[in-house]
Length: 484
Ligand SMILES: [Zn+2]
Image (tube, rainbow, N blue to C red; front, side, top):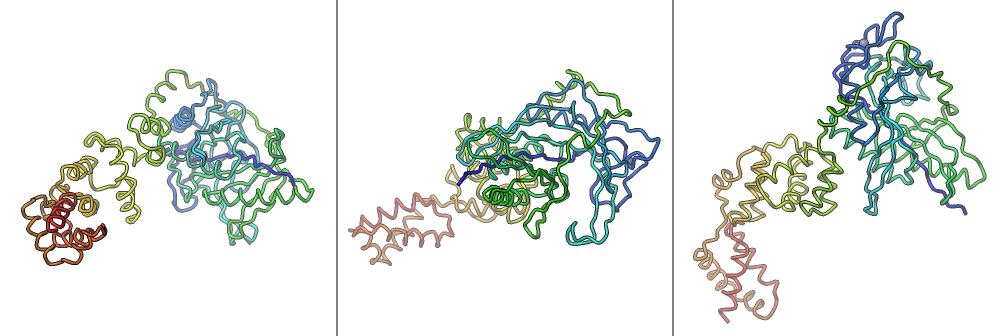
C-alpha cells in the first residue's frame, strides 16, 4: 500500500486593527446594527473614489517586516472581479503581482522540539467583502440570505504560505505562531470568534518521498483552529481513501460543515485569470520609500523567536518555559518586568506558569489585567528566600494579592503569616509533641522514615503552616533521636 504524505498550504486572512476602513472613513467596529457603517464609497456607488488608509498600509508593512519579508518598492492594487451578493461593488480591491510583502517565513517548533521554517509566498493588503447571514443551520440548508455590508472595505492582510507543512501538527503550530506574532506587533486583534482571523486551507497528498505535488482541494473560510485541525484530518482521510481505491482528487473548492464534520464540494477551483485581475485605475501605485520602512521597523517590539532564544541563552530557562512565556506577549512583559526586581528567572517562570496562570484561568483573565505588580511578585519571592514565609504560605498570600492587589508584606503582617523561625519556641512545641507520641517516635528510631512526616504535619497544623519546615525537620530529628 502506498504511503501518502500531506502537503498543506494556508492562506490566513487577518483583519487590521485600524479605526477606519481601507478606502473610506467608515468605522471598523464589530457588532453594530447591520448596514449602519457604510457609505457610498465602501458600497461601491458609481462615481466614488477610493482613498488609501495610510495606517492600514503601515500595518501591512509592519507585518511584512515582522516575518522577515521583502517590502515592495512599488506597491500596486488590483481589481479582482467577481459577482457575489456580499460584494455590492462587483469587484474587490486586492493585490496579485506586486503585493506589499514577499518572501519571509514563520518559524515553528515541531513536536520533536526542532525549529522549522515555513516560507511565506506573499502578504497582500485587500478589502473585506460584506457578510452573508444565511437563514438556515448551514449555507446548504438556507432558505434565504440577508446581507450586512458593514464589513465591506475593512482592511485585511492575506498571508499566503508555501505548501511546506506536512502534518496537522505543523499546520496548527504555524497558525499559533502567526497569531502570536500578529498580536505582538499589534496589527490585528486576531479574534477568530469575531471573524477577524480566518483561514483557507489547501491540501493534497503525494507519495511519501516524491517531489511531485498531487491535486489539491481548497477549503475556505475556517474560523477556528479546531475547524482547521478537523478539516485537515478529514481531508487526509478522504483523499487517502480516494487515492487508495484508484480514484483521483478533484481540483475544487470545498466548504466545511462543522456540525456534520464533513467537507462538501462547492465549485471547481477557480484560477487567477477567472477573476480578470487588472490594475485598479482609481489608485496610484504606492512607493513607501526606505526611510518610512526603516521608521516602521524601528518600532517593532522584541519578537517571540528572539525573546525565546534570549530566555534560553541569557537566563538558562528550559526551552519549554521559554516557548510558553514568549508565546504570550502579556506574560512575557510581566516576566521581563519582574526580573528587574528579583533575580531568579526560573523561580519567576515557575510562579507565572504555575500559580499565577492557575489563578488567571480560574478567573478567566490574563496577565495584562493582574491587580498586583511585577515588583510585588518579586517581593513575594524574596520573602520566601529570606525565610519570612514558606512556599505554601506564599501561595495563600499570592491569592490575596491576585484578588486585591495588596502588597505581600502587608498581607503577611495583617494576617500574622510570618514564618516561625524562633528555635526556642519551636523546641518547646516539638518536645511536648514527641513526649506525647512515643509510638511514632519509636517507629522513626527503628528506621521508618515516614513516621517523621506525622510529627512535621502536627507542628504545621499547630502553627497554621507558619513554622519554618527545614528548621522543624532538623529539630524533630534531634529531639527524637536524642531521646534514645
Ligand atoms: Zn464607507
